[in-house]
Image 1 (spheres, rainbow, N blue to C red):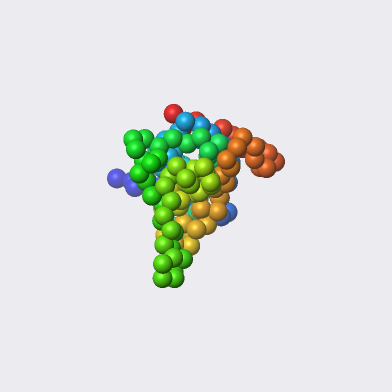
Image 2 (image 1 turned 90 degrees about the horizontal axis):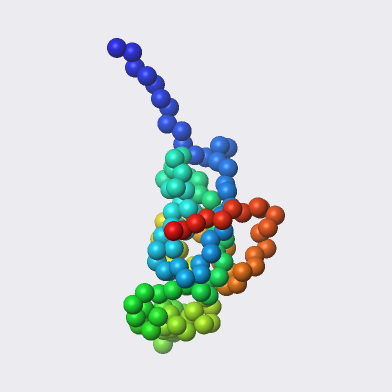
Length: 148
């Protein structure tokens, strides 16, 4: 019996072509939307997914100020910051952070879903979050990514 030899194709810098996607965050649940974003950044939506290579795509998130929390998370979810000094712990509810810096809600959620190493940090740099409708990445010709 003859053996067919198929060679597994791994993604690398030479054969990977990164795409640009635009995601509209209007009325999207934070966790569900961010899992899809993390999947795109890692490249798991492609058949050439390679765990040890940055084979993901670029993501532009618009209308981050219009994201939705389910249940009582808007009032009960607390974001913590610690400066490293005694008494340097600051707490902020999701409602306050959404009013002050809505981009940070999406950024923190996605960052927690990516690998905690230099590869994850490189993937995180390929995400751009904006509170409004406008973005400066028109030259990259991003395509719209439907979440539903």
